[in-house]
Length: 509
Length: 131
Image 1 (cartoon, chains in turn yellow, green):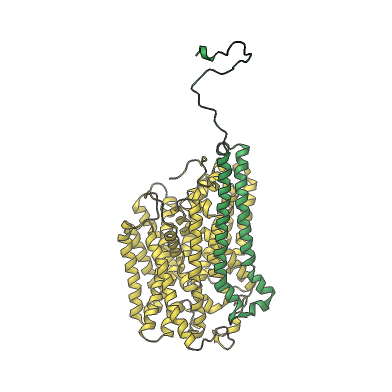
Image 2 (image 1 turned 90 degrees about the vertical axis):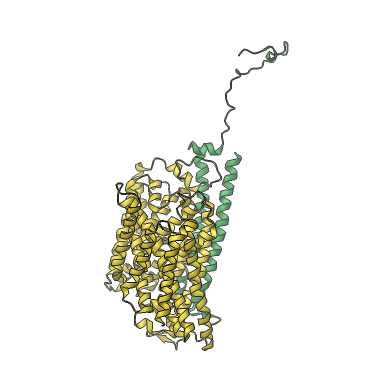
């Protein structure tokens, strides 16, 4: 594909992000409404911003790559990422907003009245955040390498640099307007080219990729489209583990929770989440189409291990000349928008937790936050090479598995079960973190295990999540003497609609 | 303050008016549901517990619905391979379901949930404010 067009697209998106970050924050609404009196970010705008931040490299590139290489079973990733928001809506949305918590450690401390729980939550937030940032940089490296031909590390460094410059310019709060714009840019970047691609495909006779005669990567079309026929040895287990990780992990992602605070009340939090659900569903209709067309027009990407690049490559391959190059440039722009928006949101969430909770009370202020941002970015950047062989969407799936094994039990039990204690929460989170952590490290080291061990470690959520829940419940029941002093008041605050005038205890503004 | 002339009952009526001294005490506080909740009395706890139960029941119903309709699909494909290889209008059924149909389904379930949850909260607010 045309290197110049792609490079221009990347630079335009990067510069635009920097410019808006530097100047736009003065004119647009910000996330942190500690400092802004009005809490009236419209649900549509807020929902677009959440969607924009949520759709990362995995959604933009990884899904299409996985579908291209492995077929129907990989559709569970985008389905799970959307259903995870529905689970969030049903179990967490309104009560989390009513808790007044800005971050997950905030919620943990407020609900359980324990500083130790807060500290553990902070460490886990950083861990999950880093695990999620790694594939963003990896995807950036892959994209820039595909487009311009640079070494894999260059793209990651570019994204990291833009994010850090943004933060240093005072973009301490990720900007609602920018993130909202990012969603619609990403949607357009996929929707606009796919229309032309489908026309070309129809013009070429509209061969179905599901046809047995179509073979790519050594797999005939009818096998590719058949469910539970992927390369894994235990596809049913793997599928259910992916379902558990994605359905239950969304609520535990650091950059998701932070956005709840911008809603005026619990009711608005629910409605905004519903709109996000619609926006995500609309977006996720598109990447599988690229994967399917890639079976016909770019099958070589599977063998060369670059299936994640199908969204970038396909337009210029299917449409000759300038048109194809421009459309590929558009998808490249969308991809970089995805890296930048998610990385920004994650970096700010992680840096906030690092500077507040991990670096101790002696360090405060802007310099600390900036130092924390550097740490938040440099660690995953240097570890990017680790996740190279795993693929972008799978690496993100690992972050979901850890989030589902640690913060999901905390949130679900904390919101709905009166008897949760601080010892119970710590035990549950440590069990979930260590079990899923072992699996993550094993997968990243690519130890190539076979059989049940391999399947259990590659997709751990199906057993780590129940283990974490069980540990949390049992440990709580064993320490019922340690119920938080204000638990009744807290439960009132979490569940009572704002219209009712009851004493909610000391509340945040 | 001693009762004035006007307050004394008319002689011979046989009825005695018994009142306390006229102080500036506030009128007796109505015992509202909200105050019961604040006082964390047993009645207050019943109010909150009933709201929690209603919302939790709703949440469980929705989760079971998702579990069966969406998460039940791999089991369906596993037990009935013919379903997995069926196709509608040339598109394989699994793709139709997982690539397209599931999204409007999730949004629809979400919309129904929001309506029901808000209704629960409205009912609770009515009960609390009425008493």
